[in-house]
Image (cartoon, rainbow, N blue to C red; front, top):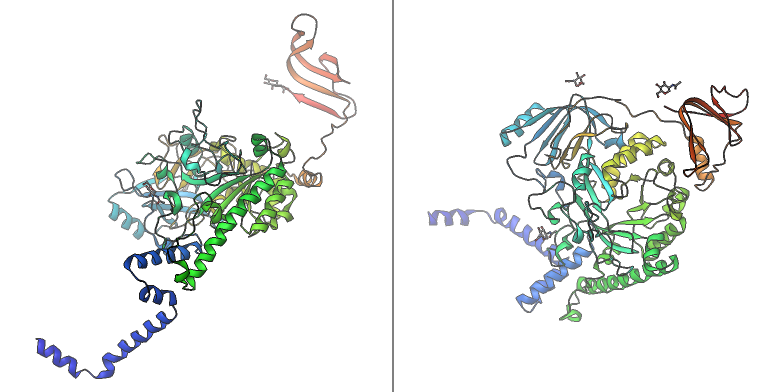
Length: 607
Ligand SMILES: *[C@@H]1O[C@H](CO)[C@@H](O)[C@H](O)[C@H]1NC(C)=O
Ligand SMILES: *[C@@H]1O[C@H](CO)[C@@H](O)[C@H](O)[C@H]1NC(C)=O
Ligand SMILES: *[C@@H]1O[C@H](CO)[C@@H](O)[C@H](O)[C@H]1NC(C)=O
């Protein structure tokens, strides 16, 4: 055997075996010549410890210049990282659904089926029978639901929530939204206050919410880091296990730096809230931000100088030195490196202006402005934000409740959308109960926001603003299996989920009947063109003077109370009144009152 092998080799012509060997040697030489750091790492390190130290530093330096996002091959995944391999998690086929996918700028509606397996959406629309068979075979189970034409959307995504940190029931001391220790606290983290027993999780899921960004409160200029959670209960019952793709820094700075960075999240706030808490003014806040970013910039520059030496192979200058780190500032350094999806709570033009200037002074992007009452009045300012116009996260109508909210408008979502700005509707739970977040979108639509954009404002747009648009907020093969089946068109009043799936797991223990009832198209809305124009023209305070009327006629009145003598000061004048006529502030007729012959009259009907 041995000799015959030898014989074969000696008889092989030289070019046959030498060609690939020479080629490989040449290739390795080229790679090595282009990688001087590698050469020095291999040949000039003095000990295995030094080799390991240098490898770690090299990978840290490569990591700080990498951009966050889905890791390579993410879209080829065959199961979710959140998949729970247990008996009661079965693949699901939803048949005969009207599926709003969020794709094609919110205009795609498919009539057909939807298949979910291993916490992912496998297929949508026309689901091939072969695929259904394949899934059934693999899992030996398949649940089939007939939706009878009901609407299906992606799970609702809440970009601004305090669920779990302002927990219900709120007993004394159960509020962990903000620290009141200082105005600048980028090192704090909302996850550290996340209560897994908040009764609102179930209520929010009953409204179709599947994912929420838990932001710190607005008592500080920099209140801390935000975290994304899915609302369903987990087997581990811990806050950590609720997190969606938490950053590698969650457990400290000692992680595998060859991994693709994940998005981090942070909250800033300006205006009345931080000022009120710390007895500051906007001038103090402005400096607080600049001083904080200056500290972060210094650390970032020190790191960059260190890594420049590493990359130019100047190891002699770096003997015994470690990568420059400061736990307090590392998250703000990541903002400067463009690795943080930043949420900034800001109402007024003066505050928006401060932040836009700050982004240009220190060169960092903002993912979204929140509350953002006056954003629709300063669209050109928003476009000057460093790195691009942020998404604007609004309430539908929760304005005029305080000075900085005074110029907010119901027409803001429409005006911003007309400027090409991304619009998000958010709850700020518990300010608006997040169970009714979809109603915020319905109201935005009522006041003129395009229906596709209204649905996107609580699904794909917030998912993108939080850096998760590659896996949630849209129904598409390979996306997370977070879906809601609705009782009627999701923008119609009183539409409610009949079932909600998170990671393919049903969350409502008493699902409704799957029926296509109510309107199948978005509700018709009034024409508010002139009101929208007036809102902008009058800086959010359109004149609300009363019309001049001759009088008022109240009809079908069952009882009349008049100011009178006596202790209560009020006297019931009569039962079964009929109608009441008022002129110049005085009641002039009670009983069978006729209408006014001419002039403008307000008529109120009572039932
Ligand atoms: C889907 O459901 C609708 C509403 O119940 C019904 O009219 C239609 O016939 C169903 N289509 C199929 C293919 O079952
Ligand atoms: C952080 O630690 C927790 C608890 O040990 C673990 O479950 C989780 O996977 C870790 N997360 C990251 C991002 O390293
Ligand atoms: C007056 O109110 C009653 C209910 O209290 C209602 O049945 C009736 O239709 C109303 N009449 C008019 C004229 O609106």
